[in-house]
Image (cartoon, rainbow, N blue to C red; front, side):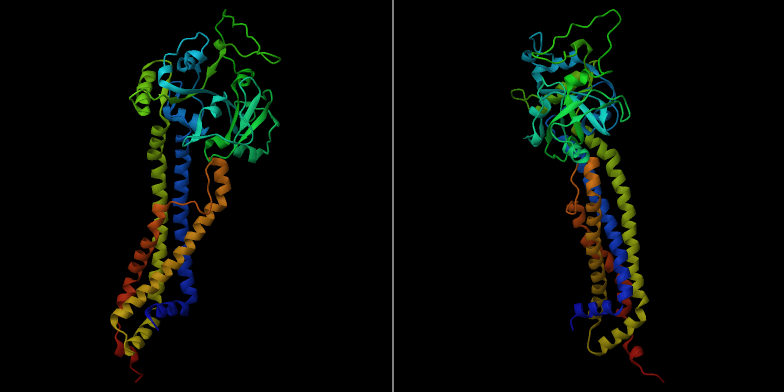
Length: 440
């Protein structure tokens, strides 16, 4: 019988002890794998907001991180609003009533306004225009696609588009009405909108958004900007045909402006963005934040340190499991000594004896590690639907942290060898004559 066969026979001779040792190691590995994969999913959840067709967000003065969290991920509260006239500074002459280019129009490729403050059954409602899905992209330059219906028209004041997670969670279909609530789920119920389009899943925060025509958003109670005493709003004019009149520009505000900066001749877009950001931040009206930079800062300050702490805890669990290998082998030292003496008497060398004990430990570690890997991914798959609904990112059995998981196998083998080194050396030094000597 070869060395591998002898090692496997030794494991089978102690089924309960070997099984308990492998199970303890499997549980430790499962915890490590689940932690690594969940950490990678969290990182992807934040990074998924960095490729949505815009590279800058403009909003009221305050925390740039809060601006990004609220605008990109639909979490946290809006800081404040900026005036409609400031939003128009990013528009070209053709899209302005006065026919003059805005102050920042030359540096702007696309400017999409957003308004927040309402909810629909715990999902954030975003007031915007058709450019959100018509001119921005879902990431990597891919346009938004609809699983059913289409983008809303700007003249359809009470139309809405919903993300895939919203449709799946609430069972809404094209044509269904929905009435947002003001400020919170239990706030005042607004006028109803109707679904005209359902987005294909993007695995980004967009999947958890309810997007409505901002013209209808402005007409809801409490959304118009109050005017100073004695100032009368401009008389609104209704669009062609029947329908409500739009809110006057003097009573409009936006929560944030999503910008895709222009590529000026001879200059990269990144340089244009930096110049535009500096110009906006030096003013008193608003602030400009770069989502990628804020996301990276968030990951460095909060996510990665937390992931490191969890990883250290799970590593301690694996170390404790490795002690089980040591205890298992030391506990069977008496039986092992007799076996070793017989092997030596039959011509086995000391090196073969040493290798047999080490291979036995490696088999336990690899077996327990494989079971733990499957169990860890199974845990992620089990909570995958909850992660997808909460964070808007894909999570399943095959979600992975490839680089970190690739280190597990050599780490387990090394750990098993270290744990088995003491009993292996004891077997190596076994006195053959003592154990083969008969009684008397």
